Length: 133
Image 1 (cartoon, rainbow, N blue to C red):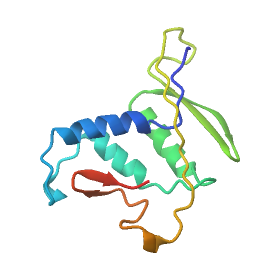
Image 2: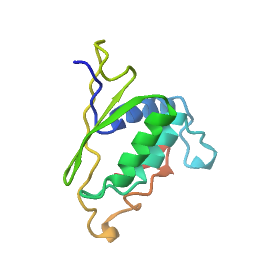
Image 3: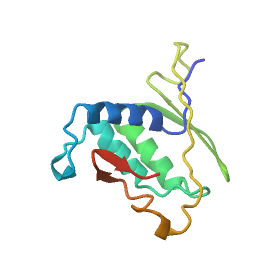
Image 4: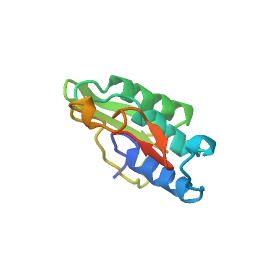
């Protein structure tokens, strides 16, 4: 494979976030909890409502993150119901091997808000956990 293909970087962000949390005191008062950069990025990403058919804000968020971090990016398809993006550390035609991560950017509707303890797209921090879908 020549490229790193994934629809966002959620898996990597989740891993890095959990790693940073494991090095942090877990207390009930999260107001003093310092989030690592990946955890802050995940918290911000989770707060973007990405119900199926409404992924544009998340797409722009991820593309901007790629640009800021000098990651090579390309949108392969961006049609109704089909959004595919490529992120690579190397120029996209580069023949070096890559790691491929695949993930969905969208979720199904959250349903009745009365059934949720926290708003589904809050990205709130509780007990050293980022809450959201």
